[in-house]
Length: 186
Ligand code: 5GP
Image (cartoon, rainbow, N blue to C red; front, side, top):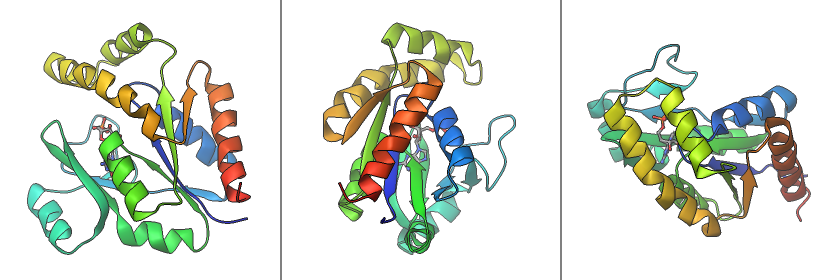
């Protein structure tokens, strides 16, 4: 069994965070990489748990030091995956990244053997409802996220698999099976 770098993407509000949390609860052989970001923490988010929250200056310094496996800018903020963490962890365990489409495709370039999974909503209407109901972003930010939705879903064809989050338990099991398949070298 080899260790696998799995990249999970999907539009904002699709439930990818919940799916990843469930996978981590069930699987001791999988670790999540914590990304760095320059956006402000949302209520309940903790430095080092959801993200490492950095200033723009700190983030730029880390870019120039080549510290990121990939990074990208969204909604005026930077997000990046720490390279050394991923490389070191892959020696012992599988790693899961929850990142956007551009980041995922860059991660695939850096790690061609990575497993790319797109999480899609059962319906776009359903997702819009969830995103608005989440109440954690301003109206302007919700609009920006909605406008990216079609773009993100259109990139599903670049992914190894698309998993529909119609039911949490089913989606989690499907993703675990896909990881196991890749771990066994198939
Ligand atoms: P949020 O602000 O909602 O936590 O995340 C906004 C977007 O940034 C999401 O699409 C999320 O997947 C993406 N993102 C989170 N971490 C990273 C990362 O390390 N690299 C890239 N490229 N995107 C990320």
